[in-house]
Image 1 (cartoon, rainbow, N blue to C red):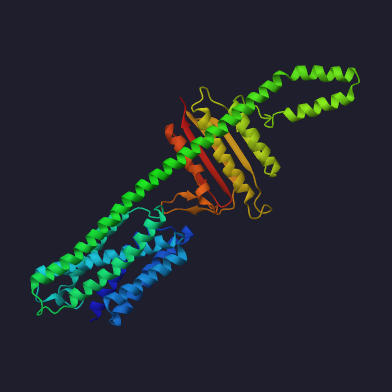
Image 2: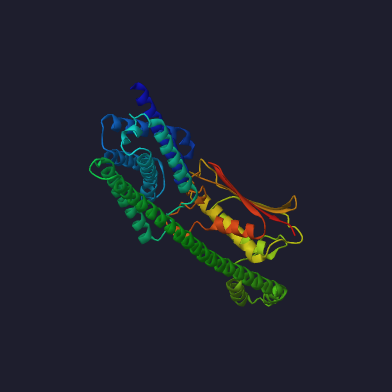
Amino acid sequence: MATIYLWEIFVNIMENVITAFLLYHRVTLRNPKYSRIIFPCFVLCSSILISFCNLLQYSATITHIFVFLSRLLFLYCFFQNTFGEKIFTCCLPSFMSMFADQITYTVALFVTANNLNSFDFLGVNRIPSTLCYLFIEFIFLLIFRYILTDISYLPKKLYSFLVFTTTIVLFVSTSFLNIIIDIDTDLIPMNYRLQLNGISILILLLFLSMIYLIQVISKTYQENMKFTDQLRINEKNAERYHLLLQSADNLRKWKHDYNNHLIAIQGLINDNAYDQLKQYVIHQQEILPQTFSTINTGHNIIDAILTDKYAISQHEKIPFTYSIILPKPFPISDVDLTGILGNLLDNAIDACKELHDPQKTTPYIHLSIRPKRNMFHILVENSSSGNYLYNSKGHLITTKSKKENHGNGLAHVSHIAEKHNGFCKIIAKPDCFTVNVYIPLL
């Protein structure tokens, strides 16, 4: 009897290890540094709960409910995903268990119709049946791991429908399986038992197909949203670029007339026409371009962007340093350069403005542009509060409340770099945030 209990505990632990592996790849911890502690604790606590339910001889339905609620509580406390995503993720291990139960039971029906008890934990065939059960769970782990994607991007109505339907089908299938198992073998022929079990498996397979179809819809929806965001960002960068060109053109025109203005001012001084001189100076101040390029790197767009961001940094009392060495020929267009520098410097300024304690963490921004090993290297480093959020794929997401208007800057920078056969490397530390953009030189 002790051997049987040890075997049951071993199976529970292995099943929860599989579940923990699935959770690790589908949801995101609030604090990733505790992953080595949280997941072993999850395996241990879940195994104890299942063993306790089995010891008290609870039905499979009651055990599934307890396990489902405990997993949901675990995800609610330690993970940052949406509540719907947590419910859906909690259902996946239960589906794995359901499929494994159904298929193992079908195998038992084919092998021996008159001695099904030989396949439970007290039967002589307990070891092959449980190994079969674990193997099937592992197969569905791979299916859910590599086929199902993040559902948090689905439209809200479809998202709610999927979560609600998943939960209902799960518990209906669990009850249906219990009914099949509890039917007396003598009261129903073997072929009918197989048909009932086949129907139950078919229901699960149809639902799995529906989930996969929704994943395809989700992927298409995400691609459309990315395309829309890309169009909006491109329009914004193009508008920013034209404004910079217009500002630079106005400045060149003003500089062209600079000597004439000095001659006029000198003439008014010589004539002692001070009232007229005052009006003339006021008028010139009004028409003076607002974006006065105080930074001169030899590249008009870089000069205009740095002047604008430098002025904002000075107003916010954020130290701004830069080092510029321009390669020849220049590897990217002015619009793409505007997209990279504009987004990175805007993010850096926002990060410095949101420091919780500027006395403890000194705000700063440093920009470096230079050729490096046949690559065009753009580096933007800024101080950070260390408050980072990641999605289920490990990508950084915005911490701002209005996420629909934020969070696409870094993705757009990466897109520009990849378009030019380059790449973007992000280093997020507790006190600083660094973005490196590498683009091959022509």
